[in-house]
Length: 595
Image 1 (tube, one colour):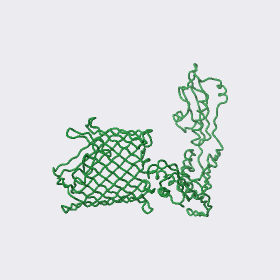
Image 2 (cartoon, helix red, strand yellow):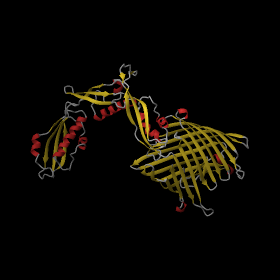
Image 3 (cartoon, rainbow, N blue to C red):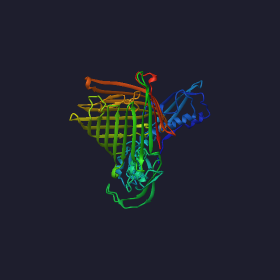
Image 4 (spheres, rainbow, N blue to C red):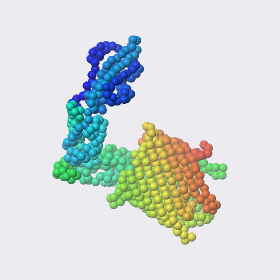
């Protein structure tokens, strides 16, 4: 504790003289502060005191003003500062008054010595290097509190979650105006995780949950890992609610573990500990349905489009995933796909994913695609994948396109992914980044040709909360294929719910497509929001038969809502393309039902 405080001098005679005087109608006209030694700018002092010009004067305001000035000088280590209220000069009509104060700062106290006791795992030099509070400078309350937090963080990261630090003493030396500080550390003991308890899981195996936490029995407690547990489990998309983990003590082991870090022979008390995870399982399976209606024209009637997806994300309680998808995006076109994920291959953070996909493009061709992806989960946020794929194009017998042939492409590629979104279902902050590259050889069987094909892809999403319950989302996407011979089956499709709203599903075709989505969301609940959106898109392709190219920029805009109900998550959006009339509004209705 401080053994000396600032001297605050008030004129006893002055206060007693004006004790019964009412300042109710008297306002401060001028506030004059004189410093015998200029330490602070006068404007700074005036800005930080309660007493202001043109406000009524009261004894309470005067006392709080003197106390505030005293605090400002103490914070800058002028512990001998003397603040004197010299006089209050009141005008004849008692409407206003001039206040005069004199401040004698005295000499600034500086830190002479910082002592740290009680530490055994880290030496004094290691701890001192974390501190901004050092000899030769003023003692600042906020700085030393930050230093203590930094030291505690170091202990937590190295397995001491119960370590405490207290300021034993702050001694002021009046003769040489110095400060001596003593910090005492109680390390208590190093926690070793010997048990993990899971409560609330009915379907998911406890071993699967513990595996995802990436905490192995017998390892030393790490606070960074401990804090990441809810985020890691949330990404499994299996749990409705995950409470903050609880660290508990099993027993003290009192080992003779030596501290090899700095050669000390002092033993460290090892505390056998456990982690308790309380969670509520959600529905691991879901059905995602989408129906859209495309208005007709003078030449043809409108028609419905849609998708249906069934996903099972926790087969046999092991977090294995199986996904089926069917969609119809044009009058005579449809596609079907199946995907399987084997998580944590042979116990390592490696996911193996297999995909089969088939698209029937009206009466032109059928595309069949198979892919095997090996995903290496390098960290909670970053993963890298290697991919091998086979694609086959089967031309329809009724197709009269001369620039399309039966072909096959064998490709190798890689993918990088980085994800910092705070909540996968309805993010309020973070980014999502994915970048992929493929190189393959395309064999055109009829022509006995083999040509190279390269593909590039980029997906980037930003989420930012700018006001309470309001979030902006901005995404940028791009895909490009390069080859000496690009057929219609090699191109990408643009338009519709997932790319460029306000246009038909897959309305545009290009060897190079880019699109961007902007949404302003009003959050209604954890998984519900209303939003307005604005989309931009671009496509480019060559037309070899006409020796021309087709390219265009497109705009789309509209409003939508996504609401979670007892039936599932319902999404409705109304979208218009550039130049559309209201009767050309694209209406999309979707339902995600978890079961």
